[in-house]
Length: 216
Ligand SMILES: O=C(CO)[C@H](O)[C@H](O)COP(=O)(O)O
Image (cartoon, rainbow, N blue to C red; front, side):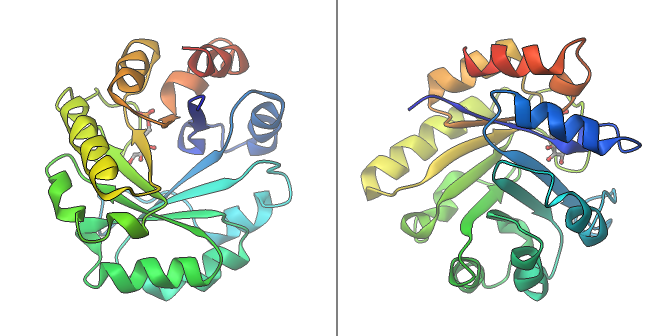
């Protein structure tokens, strides 16, 4: 399977989101990646439903939301209504993770679980078969433009092993510090989806940068 590319809108120009969304529509990107932060689970606040509702009709590719929030259960139906196709919650922020996954899938969305850099992969062994995606955080969540944590590569190997062992249908998504160098390494270790924010939107030609990531 060709690697999927999910540009993170966190690094887009919020004064002209439409322009960046249209660029992603034109590009070889596969998904829109939306980072939702609550200022509690992570020390930053990003954007919420008013923004997602406004961009929903502009986004012509699946919307992949990464929730960095507590009490995600309270908002699952609301994210579905906002047009989100894939919803990822954090392992560290969910008390009843299995129930949360079921609720997301009950709403017709793909369900993902994100792991912070300090959270080991083996903790997912009893839910992996239910998961559409595992999002390996290769930086500490909360901010774009951080340095890639090398240890993430080993976690991808461990996750790949777990997925094969359990014959799970799960995609491996990686988020944080992705560029051409780290991206190539991540693909070699088994990543299926690369999220990239600063590397795409901070480049001279974001569309060309997406092309380069897609063809690594
Ligand atoms: O989840 C995130 C932050 O919590 C971002 O998606 C991630 O950091 C991507 O940003 P960049 O590619 O700029 O490192």
